[in-house]
Length: 152
Image 1 (tube, rainbow, N blue to C red):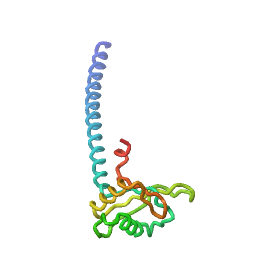
Image 2 (image 1 turned 90 degrees about the vertical axis):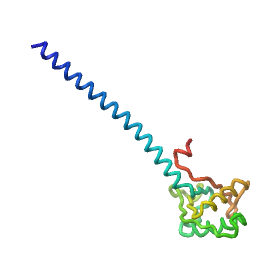
Image 3 (image 1 turned 135 degrees about the horizontal axis):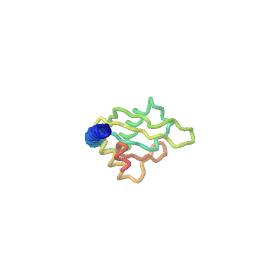
Image 4 (image 1 turned 60 degrees about the vertical axis):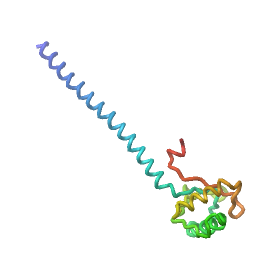
């Protein structure tokens, strides 16, 4: 009859409402967990980048195969006695982004320094000097941060 059908619909509706509440609670929990994980991931990325510097202005004419050795020798000379007669050691250096036409700006270079203290000395030297040049081109130097931190 109509009353039994209505009672059946009501009980099914209550069951569905309880299921929706459960799923909504799980969704909120998952969103919070996702935010925590994204925050931890960003923190790990920044920890991995703490020995990195980003150089702007190094011409693309310096080929990738010679980039590492040329950077080491140039920075050793540019930093002068700040490095205390130590050779600056760079573990890796690579350009970021796609190749551009010859008349366009050069691509940034990311470098990973072997020694964190040397990286800090170089960064301080670039901040203290008004102009640091390589082959008569002004070079700028920045700490390499993750995308989230650099946009903040």
